[in-house]
Image: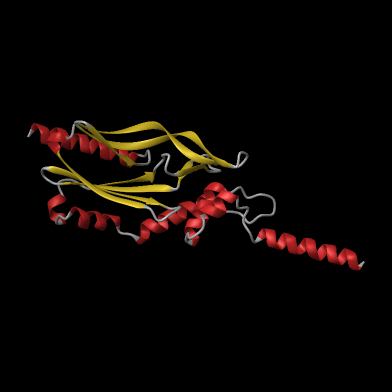
Length: 229
């Protein structure tokens, strides 16, 4: 009887320990060293399988909320205006355009959620402003699995812009394969906005929706108007 109680106690302790710890692979254990709690959660979201009785990583919805909370804490519209260095009255030719979405490339981790939507550890916010002579672009790209970020601005004269468009492209990105216990490359269909100038094309991550399509039509109309002025 005593032996049985001891076995039950040992099993109970083992289950309790397992349910409060993550099923971290060696790769994950090395990757989370020195990371913040949020970054650790993101790494585990992309690279951990829950496993039997293990503590579960954050859900798709929780990851989405983490990103939206980050955006809500940062006034990227004002950041854009400050970075561009112009008075807001100078960039009111038409309403500014706001774009955002996941970035898929070989320098980010990606995962197909339970809702069949692909998500990435890299997220991009873009703002476009329009003066009487130029288009100003502000872009902020955040890596949620590490401290890396990229903040950039570009400006284009209307006469130099040959096209604004949206495109659906297939790109290679890394995803974690639990069976092979390593990252593998997969092809992901992604939607992007693009500004084309002679010899160059700049992309902005975006979501395929009516707002983006309407904004692109408005920009095309503005370009025609400026080029024919």
